[in-house]
Length: 391
Image 1: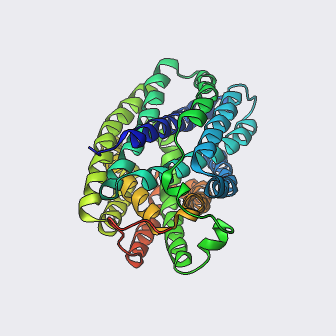
Image 2: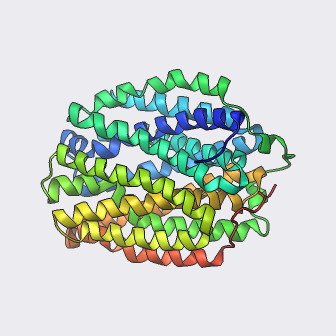
């Protein structure tokens, strides 16, 4: 386990609370999507359009992340938690799918902000030799938040609005995070000059941003439709019940939790680039398997997909943090999220169009080829294991 001093433990505790809330509130829509689709009489193209609208919310995270690079990590994390909690609470009262999409668009903006800034903070404050393990703990906490939704929804199903009502608890947590989360020493130790976005457009950061952005975009062509619509696929195509879906998510979550920690250990010992490439290719293959076979293949593929993707999370979290300067690290994280949103929109539109001829599973499978192409771009990035963070 990561060896942390008192300040680092306090930082991880309150940043961890922020990502727990993000994981819980951000997973409600996905788990409850079949019930939401039935209530609002939405078909696959409509749900794909919903996902595309939500991806646009990532746009708003970029200027907010730039504020985190200029004014610090603590306040923006607290603002983000308060923002997505308030919007998600309001989502419990929406009368239409369009209304839900509009509110969730703003929630996504704040959720992306919190995850990106919290990851930047943990990378900056963790011991140099164990950054990957520190990020893996943060990812595990986010997964714990998702697990709360997974356990609660089968009990409440199909009453998805109740979960959004509970999201209001984050509004109470936000002031505590503002007061008790320490500001990062690494950020305080650099002199902020000029625009973070302008800095990222200078060598060598520009090349790194472009390569990682292309990779995240291509990977999202597969993962966003798969992640958004897998509960719909299980319900409509495989005729699974909410309880069966939750069993799958629990098993996948257990595997994912172990894999978060394994990925952190793996990357701190063997580096960033090789594990990132191997895990990305493996995730693409497992995801495609999930939608290319029957119930058994769907179950096995989802468990493998969860394991590989979870192991990759701390690898990319540590690597992306080490690739960019402290003066623009939060902005870089948000920019990568924006690139992923572009790929998400492309993937969702593609699934919406192709599902009429190939079926939902076949349309998602085609994204696997694109995702593997994105993984190969990672060969162009430098290894950064245990190197000092650029200022």
